[in-house]
Image 1 (cartoon, each protein chain N blue to C red):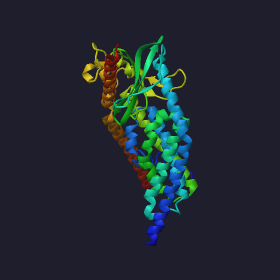
Image 2: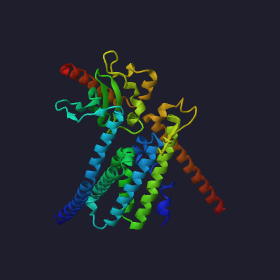
Image 3: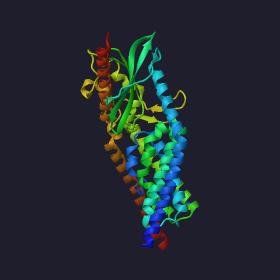
Image 4: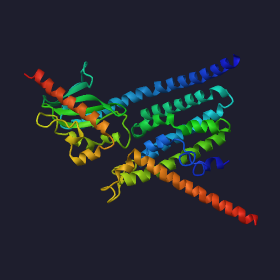
Length: 216
Length: 188
């Protein structure tokens, strides 16, 4: 059962392996703080939608499942947005735009369709947490590379006298700005995907070698 | 036939439950959101006028960009104006609060509600972003409304968010014009 949680972290990572949710991933990975914000929003909405889709799986007829899921997801996003605006204004200022973007994040609909509508409540909750955290980790990796190379900074939440920005000497004076723009997003994503593919093939090869060896 | 009715009915129930839930949550959160907006506006007004008082708001009815203005009062005399301006950003309206001297010179600017892209256009919320507009807007120094009117370091900083820059610059130029014309019209 715990496998449903851990699979989203690496083995079925939504960004690098399943390749879902790429538009928001590339759009908001300009700064580390944005990646954290988007990740938190996605974990929350994914959890809510997986719970409700799993609970309602016997109620929702096959034919109208997609519109039903969309209504559930959109309601959840709106609730999060309104509650944050009212009671967590500073959080809402940082994440406001991302929260509305989550409606069109295909990871949420993807997990509802591929997982939560067939599985038990507990499994769906674990799946949502694993996939959400996996998405956040992927975003963090992309945004870390993009912000460090593209701006020479690492932006986190401002706390007290610390303004939230770590400036890397030398790099922040001569950043490769292209990495921070859309072109850079696609480049970084491409290289990371290549890296993950390479790791995958290497693992596959060693598995085959082991199989051959044990066959002898 | 029966199938369609059952499916339709169930979808209707889901939508109805969602609508009622959202309506309820909106009813709870709306007053809090409104109060916060007013509080934010007042805080911004205070931040723009640390050295003076502001008059009550006066609406500007038939102007597409300028929604309202306040007079900045120093010792009972009008020392300038604060304008509430709407600019066109990359994704929708940007609310801008700008303080002008009586000759149209921009004294301070604050970007309020906006939907700009985080990491690009959103950088305009940083007070340092507005420095390039300060002390412009009068006859001798117009508001920079094109990239080539900026110094190269400033122009580099807005790369990737040109639309946001243009939206703010045009709104501020419009505001300066409004102040200059208003002064002319009502000057004793």
